[in-house]
Length: 501
Image 1 (tube, rainbow, N blue to C red):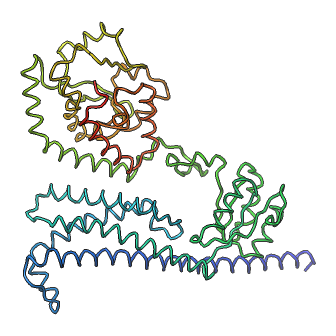
Image 2 (image 1 turned 90 degrees about the horizontal axis):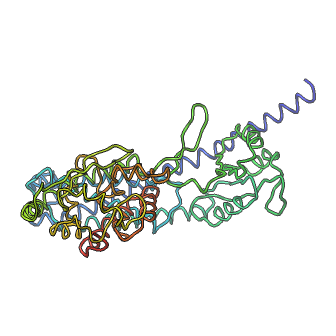
Image 3 (image 1 turned 180 degrees about the vertical axis):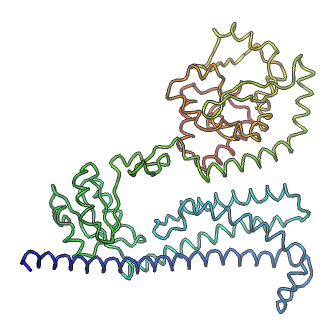
């Protein structure tokens, strides 16, 4: 065997030993992460159940006689409402868990942000409890649930979540300090992004990362270990487990780099060149044989879309039932005030340009559309929309119901049918859409709504351009928290009749 072959064999043997060592080290870390994560999830849900049982024991059981701990099963069988409360938990916690899982709160390697995570938990709790109460309402169960228990259980759920976040944080800090759980991190590229990434790795007390150094072909310094071509040397020397690449424009270098280090069981993470675009409107996908970043229209997709549609169905159904006396009263007033139909079914443009008939109480005279051509010169709105403060076509009753948005209430039936949502961009008229530019067409990416950001930001007092910007901001930045804020802000705006004419 030649000297060169012996050298190559020795190098391959060394690479194999290093690769095996890194793989075993990573496997041990992964096993530890999985075990600790399952343990923490188990503790969290055990506390949820224990909290419920405690509340049930003090708030419900006293109404059904004494409870014998010596014969628990028999005592529970004597309480007829136990199945109903099990049903309640069976609705609440799967929805709650799905929302937290979707946000990645059960991933071990996710950075823990106590305030942000608690806000997410509060939203998930409110949403899951509201859905559970709504479903139980439709199931028409004869059981009267303890409202105090439900309220205390919601507060207890958030409190337990917060406690478990602190436990997770404490455990990960202890592991990090004890150095029994750490991952050596190497960063390719000592530029601005690389330095910011280094600062975050160093400052984090919970992700288990230990910054080793940079590799860069153009920079020098105490933290720059050497050139990018020397990467195998530093992987072997420091048993690197995570590599961040911050030079994505150097495609040839990256291809060589990945080829060299593929033999090692290391995590390779590439920071996208236009990483500032990677917001909630970006998803990762595959285009044939190529991985790609896909720009999506809105974060309102998947489970988010399912939750929003479910809430629309439940809340619109409850709303129609509760306001039915108001609908009847307004219908009578419209009929007495002026000639014509009680309702109008106006053609509007919905999601992706699909037309639908939007239901409204009639607030104008019967020949309003014919009169519009004569009034175009008095239009006070910019852009394709038409608005007049003292529109002569509006009836007496119409002026009142428009001021307080009562004319919009029949749109709850559009929501129930799936043509609209409770919250979203205002559905435009066909002649308005004909004048849209490409930018403005984007507001048709989602279902239109009865209320939205435009409603709580001035209604008719805002310009058309501001209206468009608010709608597009809602579409691009959609979140459950934004949905709740708009919903709660709509009520006082409508009661005060601000900006409506």
